[in-house]
Length: 132
Image 1 (cartoon, rainbow, N blue to C red):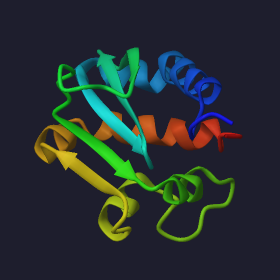
Image 2: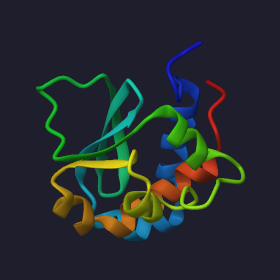
Image 3: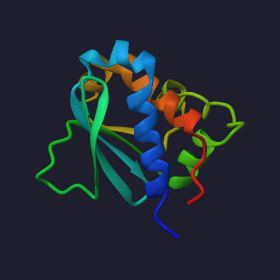
Image 4: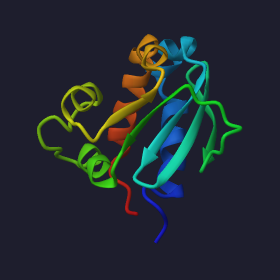
């Protein structure tokens, strides 16, 4: 069994973000690298004008990522479930009320791109729970 969330799920997620019409409009201003950490599995997400151009598993110190989102796998599973419990249904609700869902690094940069990041997280939920 691969590490959560698994390569096939991540590939589906990247394809959905890159094909999303709304991201095509609001993503023009998002060009940054950020991290997503699912328990022990960490990925750097390289975004250029709202399109994910690269996903780097287990990024090292040579990958500059000014901010990221980290949570244990069970928190991500709740967020990605078909019927999430209260507070796990939305990216911002989790940031405000789920202590294990953490924004790392420069939160100002993240919040300057809040609309596009919120859409990316909604697409993540729409992609569904990984089978990993």
